[in-house]
Image 1 (cartoon, rainbow, N blue to C red):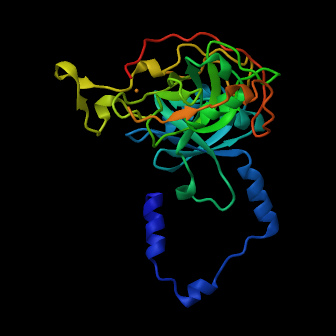
Image 2: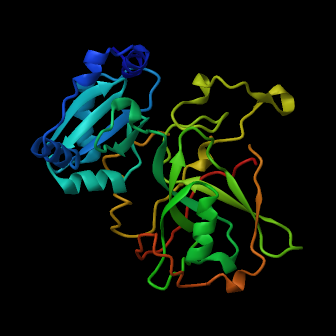
Image 3: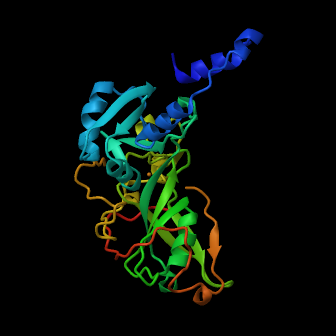
Length: 311
């Protein structure tokens, strides 16, 4: 029975007084043992339109994730699996690395907390490194990078050097990208109150299958249910495209959150955008942002390829 069907059935049941009084209380030793086992587990969902074969998943996952130790895998829901690692290092690398995919289908991982049921697990976002291009030179610092990153999603990490500066060909920041929202294509920036806004383009490292029509990760345009708009010459206008995928992945060398591409099965996407105002970029801490909520590491940026978008 589907977990959602089970949840609905339980909610519809009228529990009798006798049933209500018979409650099993978990002993402390059993609870502690259960909590300890969860520390080595992760929930994983394959974002796919069809059911994924369990045996295929079991065979491919250790190869894709490049695990150094054994992992136990079991199906617990529709395309939802629980992975029990034998090594905390393997588990940590999965959470800090990626994004991961199985034959072009995104893999979304989440931690499992005590008391969590299958229906409580959240698979609504993927951590990804994004590159921000055409950035004014006054903004190559951690403070501006975090501000721009927040326009895309929850900021997890900034690519910076020891001084908090982010010099390079582009800014690079790790973001938690929502799967239920279209990919953000650009950021509009206004340095001064009366200045002309600058358009900064966004590209995504290791971007998986995404729809060129609706901008969502997880399906191609031929499977999109959203109606398209007709452009010039009666051809459909597609606001997204392959240019959203970053052409290179330079940056922090050896960072645990940017593992080598080998082992990742990489496949080959226009919404209103608000303008950010930086009225005094000079006072916005050109270097050395002291925020403590980010994991700090050093590195440098590189060039990226790809064709130019139509925005």
